[in-house]
Image (tube, rainbow over all chains, first blue to last red):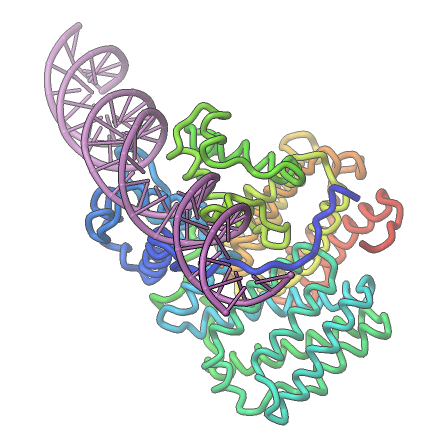
Amino acid sequence: MASDLALNDEGRPQLGRNLTYGLLDNLGRAIVTGKFDHDPFPTEAELAKQHSVSRSVTREAVKMLTAKGLLSARPRQGTVVQPTTSWNLFDTDVLRWLLERQFSINLLRQFNQLRVAIEPEAAALAAQFCDEASLQRITDGLERMKAAEQGLDDTLDADIAFHVAILRASNNPFYVQLREVVSTALRTSIRFTNRIKGRTASVADHSAVRDAIVARNPDAARTAMRALIGDVLELIEEAEGVKAPI
Amino acid sequence: MASDLALNDEGRPQLGRNLTYGLLDNLGRAIVTGKFDHDPFPTEAELAKQHSVSRSVTREAVKMLTAKGLLSARPRQGTVVQPTTSWNLFDTDVLRWLLERQFSINLLRQFNQLRVAIEPEAAALAAQFCDEASLQRITDGLERMKAAEQGLDDTLDADIAFHVAILRASNNPFYVQLREVVSTALRTSIRFTNRIKGRTASVADHSAVRDAIVARNPDAARTAMRALIGDVLELIEEAEGVKAPI
DNA sequence: GCACGTACATTTATCTGATTAATTGGTCTT
DNA sequence: AAGACCAATTAATCAGATAAATGTACGTGC
């Protein structure tokens, strides 16, 4: 069907290629760090002067931040930082800026509360709909995890490959889209993740997910994945010291 | 904690306020409609001429579309439409463009496959962590649904208010963020939704979710919400005629 | 013929400076 | 006190020039 969203792959340009993307990155970081919580956001003329770039560059960077929900610009009022509720947390740039600032275990917990909803359902969908190629990618991810256990591959990369493979296998563009978000979060929070679980991720637990998908058993796949991420969540909450809500 | 994301509310500017946002909207629609699947995307000079605006306007619109994952621009290569997998489906503009084009029941199904993962978990979180104010908003939503049953309120608005209240009550910024996405999708697909369920949404089923949250019972809340959205999903799949995967 | 580098053409990226339009806040009028 | 008007501010838009990046074509030497 022509109206369906295709599910292929592609890379993306790295930030900082040019002045505009460099400024985007700097401003994004500064905003999520709260640099403008008290001071007002600079006017476009001030921005240009401070960063030694032309007004075109500042305007284009501001426009991109606006598109991501971080800013809002109006004549006379100026450019203002939006409340965090309008920030697009599913934008990998925004998420990365958030995770890279002073590291917040709280944010990591909240993100895994999202994963525990998403990934089990993705696994269930995969069990229903995934094709041979997707299955192969899942198996490959698992193999890499086994290899990593013996020091033959990178643990984090292997783990990411596995979870991304599941998301892709769901054949649902919303889940597929989240692969970048999950990759970003896992990659950015690696230091912490390594700290709380000295052991490598359990291959057996991951294997259970794959087996359930192969067996075309959605419920089993959902349960297995839920257990997997539920463990991570518990470790985080433990490390956090069973914090009171809010 | 200062590093936490605040969870307040705010409106957002409507599209089309000025030339840039108007062009953004036009181009966004054109891209998701597949207008540039065969023809190459125009150069910034061509765009400016076609839409009778300056190059600044085209560049800023293109930059926003780039930020949303729809475009990519490089010297000499030109500006190209990105594969759909890089489109940020959690951006309300992108989602609205997608839902407003030739209506796709397939996309609606895929979106509800996401909801069936998200909202039950949000309800469970709400049962654990929600405060008085959040609870009140949930109750208000329910009251509005009751009122709507008697023609005293809008059915769709009431339904949206209820589901948004749950998401907000989760106290998790990722779920809270999705309130705009869910609102957008529900509002845009109203015609279809009305068509498949002639009846108003069942107040009793929604009430079960609220009761479970009041009782601080996460599992019951999760189950009740899952049943609620599972029903919608079944209706969609029914209307779709149990379509083969992919 | 082939590898390699050079010149060229194309397109985005950047800069500059000026003008326009929208919005806010204050002032004046009644 | 209420509304109309005026002024200041700031983003929005325009125009035109220069710079940087990069694919293509060509030529050169082997």
